[in-house]
Image (tube, rainbow, N blue to C red; front, side, top):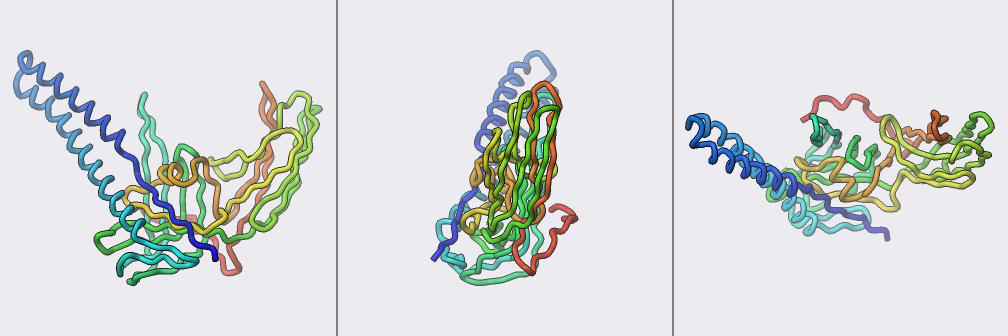
Length: 315
């Protein structure tokens, strides 16, 4: 019997909160030193800014701590079997799909990470247990948290676990597609052949290189790509599906593509169902690389439906 894998993902905000508090304390110290040189109203106004920063940092820290504590408690109290998650008590919940988008914003010398979240509820339920949601999912996330996650999920409505999110990643699926990609630049030539074999892609690279350094193979879509192999003459395999079904426990208000990368994948993640691309790159020094792509599809089953392109308004 194959048991579900359960994973706890927490949001780490300690460093950011501590940095804000230290900055605010230094700001207060400077403001106190200004009291004898500037009007008192100006000093008080100057002092109000770091106090506000501290209050915001404390609110953020409290929210992270509370969310992590709830997710940890449900994680520790729940049991998983082959297809079922059993809760420590009867709970109310919503089943649906979660959508996450992570991106970085640069302002001068600093960068800040932002997340858009949406939970699209389909129905409500109540019980001591629920079955694994064996539905399609899709993750395209870089190692720095840039990218998107779409997956079936359950959002807990009952205290003391309110807003804990369970995200379901199935290991079921079959890869469809095959292609031959030819690359050439001057005397450099390479041929990449691949095909879907069950849950993985299997391919071969044959090349004759003089100026080019190597052939690189990547998978992904849009702006998210993951290198899976490189060299001159080699075989490669890649699976966008894990070896086991996984249920992730996290706080809905805190979970992000970055926290999933840190807590689960440790690297860029190109996983799930739908259409992806395989990219073959002829790496040429001091010149533009030669790039060609071909599609492959990961199908969940005969009743599979296409992903919705419009996610609708964000929460």
